[in-house]
Image (cartoon, rainbow, N blue to C red; front, side, top):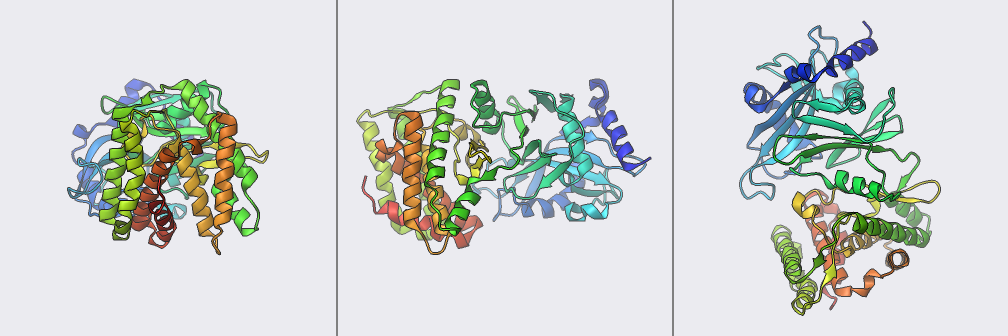
Length: 480
């Protein structure tokens, strides 16, 4: 039997009735030998992955949340098996990750012999346990595994703790390819028609990258691609969002690359920044119509400022270069706290949460779209899902213009200043209010974002640390 034919047979077997698929699904209690047999391989492989959030601290152990055999291993040895694992990774106490261990999603291919084309995806050979003698590899690199995932979306339903849903029909025969570009997640593109984002670090509760695009789709907002399908795990009282399939915006270019190209060519980016501001405001308006908009009153303002101060203090402990600027930075947060004490209030709503040029796409027709509504992955999911002032997104984009200008040599601060002004003007044109009209709140959020950037760069890209530190110097020397 040819490989394509055996794939079709395997897919047919894997989409049988619920009674049959229940045999293929295993729980943590029924796989006591599985995880210990995989632990030596995972201990070496997981910390090296770009999506692993616990870098810098040793892994002390793993615990199994759920295991599902999505595609049973071909006993004849001609095809792959696909094992879906939800695993908690434990690290020493005091690590900023979750105290019980972060939960990660693994899609592990299993073969008797690994083809040369999958050599780079190899994890290792299992020496004991139920998969002894088999080769384990990153399943998303295998087109046959990618085909299986799309087939699951085409025929939605439950498979053990996994539940597949779709909002519209999906055509068959779309060729998959793995995108080796992301850090906190993984993505597959199907025939330039759809893109599947696989969340690696997962949390109880609906991921904003599913929740918000669904809400925007109901409002008819065309600035955000609406989810076509998604899958979740039902291992706790709240579902864990595992992946989202969305339209692939073929031919679109991300805003970061467009901005760098403009800088390299000596061109202005003002029209693009103005249009981006308008697009952001349209998304905010649609989110406000779709979801609750509680006011940011006295108590919530106090909690907002307390969170900013806490993040500043934690960052200063981790990055000594930040320490001299702490008093000046604190004044930005104190100004908002003082306004809150005087009963000043602000509007709050759901926002993007991690908006920057890399989270935007411009089509050939000049139309801007916003993508990746997951929020800052390092922050707890409840915080990412909570209503925030819209200036949080505005501050993120203003920082992104500064990043682009700083990454170009020589540094062009006037280019960044023009972009920042044009973005705010475009936003005001669509929203009816200029974010610069609330300078204290905008400065506090820009300061909070710069502090986050300092911590991120110090941990992951030390060579980039001077970029946010330049903003820190500016923000620390500015009075409200």
